[in-house]
Structure formats: structure tokens, C-alpha cells
Amino acid sequence: MQRGDQGFGAAGLLVLASLLVYLIVIALPIIKADTVRLSDWLCFYGAVVSGSMTLVGAGAAWFAVRRQINEQRKLADERADKERASLSASIYAEIADRAARCLNDYIRPWSVWEDRQIEPTVRAFLPERAVVYPGAVEKLGLLDQPVVVGAVQFYSRLSAVAQAMEFIAADKERLWETVQKSPATAQWIDPLRNTHARLITERLQSCFQPALAALKGLGERPSVDADTVKVYPYLRETGLTLHQALEKYKMELIE
Image (cartoon, rainbow, N blue to C red; front, side):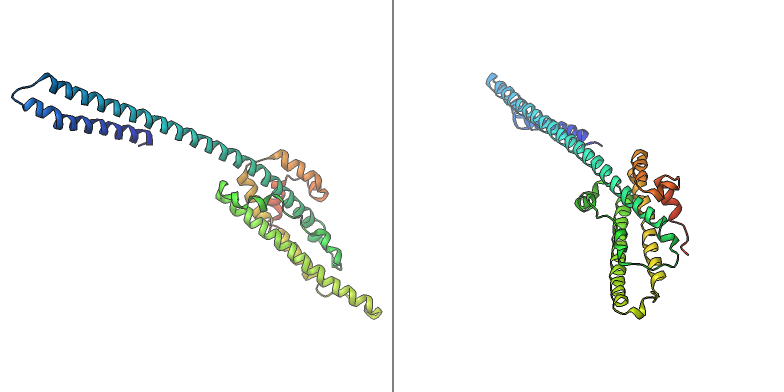
């Protein structure tokens, strides 16, 4: 039963109860009386009319309040829909861009790292800081659960990528300082170079599945995907859409 139906039922019961009260309190004593005077009936009719007017006024007020509540609820729903649409568009664009950057760096150089030294300049590959997500965390409840889970996991793993790169960059800085101070170690090879390269590759790849889940949950936006892919050359060279690339590389084995 809807709220409106419940309201009509309550109003009907109120009317019936009032009529019953009038009948018991006023009408029955008049009918049972040996002598019925006109003034008695006038009193009865006056009470009925007065009570009826009160009920009519109460009913009108109830309908007015109900209409106002419905209008407020409608406006609130419309605002929530607009806010949800705006949030979906902005967070989709940011996840698409950050995921495309991860794909681009994954494709080259990290997935084809050829036993090379890693220099402190690895910080150049640090993911861009999130702009939309930090301000949207409190509003994620407007989105569907798969989107929320995917977004939270994606940004968490993106942060893990940044942490790994910062750690490796700091380690290489210490290494290069040692090499520069001692010419005898100029040809020394970093034994952790492949381990660190693999760590970065795995961290990047871990972002692909949650990014894809979040983007799918937010709805297809081919124009946004196409514009995003254009910015990243190695991703663009694959000829894949953003979703296709995420689907492909999330399952790729890292050697």
C-alpha cells in the first residue's frame, strides 16, 4: 500500500469515528428523549456541521502538507540525480586518465624492461595526484556499490604505485651517490634493478582490474575514452580502446 492510500484510509476512519461520536453523544439522547424539541435537533445539526467543517479543514491542511512533502521529495530526488550525474562524469574522466597513464607506462618501458639500471629519475613516472576523488569520497554513496569498490581499490593501488616509485627512487639516489664518490664502482651493476622493475610493473598492472570495474559501472563513455587514449602514445599505438586495453593487460603474465 502506498503512503497516499494509507492517508486516505486514516482520513476515512477519522470521519467514521467522528460520526459515531456524534451519534452516541448527541443523536441517541435526543432520539430516546420523550419530548424532542427543535432546539435539540438544531444543537445536533450545529455540532455535526461544526465537526464536519473541522474535518474538512483538517483534510485540506493534510493534503496541502502532503503535496508540499511530495514536492520537496521530488526536488531532493532531482538534486540527487544531478549530483550523481555530475559526480559520475567527473570521476569517470579522472579514472580514465589515470588508468590510461598507467597503461601507457606499463606498455613501455616497464613491461619490456631489458635488464637496465633504474635511475633516480624514475620519479618522472609517478602517477598524477588525484583531484576529483579526494573531494568526492563523502559523496561516493550516491554511486552503485561496484563503482565505489572499484574506485576505492583503484586509487588505493595507484597510491601503492607512487609509494613504490618513491622508495625505489630514494634507493637509487643513495646508490648513485656511492658510485659517484668511488670511481672504482663506476661499472657496478645494481643487483635489485630487475626486482624493482618487476615491482613497479606489478603495481601498475594491479590498477587495471579495479579501474575497469569502476569505468564499466559508471557507464560507457566512448568519446571520453577516445580523447584520453589520444594523449598517451604507447597506448594509442595498440589500436585498442581504453576498456579493451585494460581487459587485455590486466591478465597479461609478467615475466
